[in-house]
Image 1: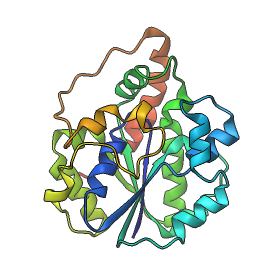
Image 2: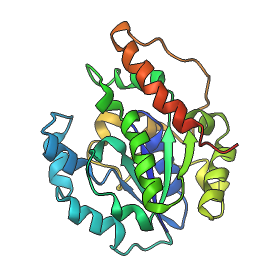
Image 3: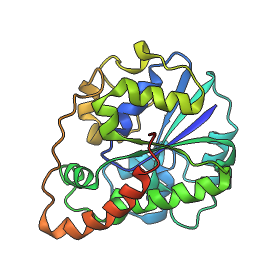
Image 4: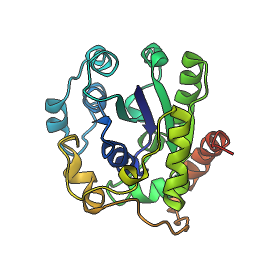
Length: 239
């Protein structure tokens, strides 16, 4: 089973990848379209040249790897960033995959992103694109994807992951998925030194204390706009 997890940045997506990689029956891949995205946009992201050198920049080749390349385990978990899939890209390759969407309150995303980058815009956080992709993938597969909120995962990791496993029709393995050894992984992208410091120290999902951070005034309109799409996606969470 090939599982695509669609997320924005600063959204516990790497911790989720750790959880699935710690299963004995699962292989993971970290943001396989990142190099394509950087080559196409020319954006000066941290470790830009290293990222481009580490992955194929040919979308067709990346799609071939994701859909056809053999893997050694029954599960193949793919961590994707929504902004790496620009509007207009053919999503037909998704039809045979299983899909989950990881969402997070936009105020938390914006505040976290600004700790690592000097500015942020709608494209950076990718929430509007996440909603667009949800519609596109639903049309391609004929089934609405699973939606999981980061707050739900951190509030009760066992329940959230059990729900996701139930949607996918695989066994929930709490002894594997709720804790993992600290440190870096060979599967981590070359951008890990810039973004993954906290995850590398972690041994499980961080205990969650609900507190929506204050968004700088200059980004309040962005937050309000993103909230519309976030709340629309949130309506698809399990009851």
